[in-house]
Amino acid sequence: MATKVKIFSGQVSKYLSDKIAQSYGMELGKVTFLSFADGEFQPSFEENIRGTDVFLVQSTHPPSDNLLELLMMIDAARRASARSIVAVIPYFGYARQDRKDKPRVSIASKLVANLLSAAGVNRIITLDLHADQIQGFFDVPVDHLYASSVFIPYLKTLHLDNLTFASPDTGGTRRAGSYAKYFHTDFVICYKHRSKPNEIAKMALVGDVKNRNVILLDDIVDTGGTLCKAAQIIMDNGAKSVRAMVTHPILSGNALELIEASALAELIVTDTIPIKKESPKLKMITTSDLFAEVIRRLKKKESISSLFKF
Image (cartoon, rainbow, N blue to C red; front, top):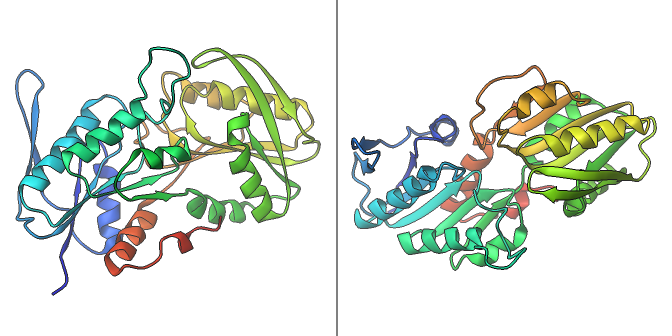
């Protein structure tokens, strides 16, 4: 007899979980969160999950309660005798702390991986990790999905001529090169030097963008400073237009205001993180069908890598 699948959501990702469950063709599972006066909380599954394949959807961006909520749900599912527990983490928070870039600091993404394993997770599904090597921090299988599968169809609808892709820093060169190869076009790089986190000291453009429609690619937009500065440099070098496609819209502080006042024609993002407010320059593309299809393929033991163009 086939094992039953149930999809549950943490509080911060319920807007996305509802769409994933709908796309999969089922109701979202019932889970409640009891809150105590001091801020402590307790998740509780309000239906039987014994012997089922449980999928828990929750992004782990700050505040840290989002991560703790997921850990507690995993622990509760394990203690309720779920057959398997899969954490669907649209945005894997703390991924920027993937190495020791100076003495006496934590490798927080490895710590988070350890916490998830200790809680009892059997598998991870996530989208566009900040660094590919984070997959190696886990001792359980990781299905690392790519936003290209939702970005490429939208990009084709724009019918842009003289297309060029750009990376806002040297770390994104591989991503820009992959898109350029798929569309048989060129890519450029914006070289940046930071004086401290979230603050750019200088930036320079490597490559030609004259009379080109440029697409800036990145996995995270936080303060928006890098994207806005890169967009201005690209336009100053003769580009026809510049857009940005970024997977995870953290958009801290006045990031949206900066983007609205910038040279960017459009900021295209996914719905891995809830948007605090709308903007005429902001275009959101849902990842719900992608996550639902991955869950479906896991259930049927079918290939996941065949979903992606590159």
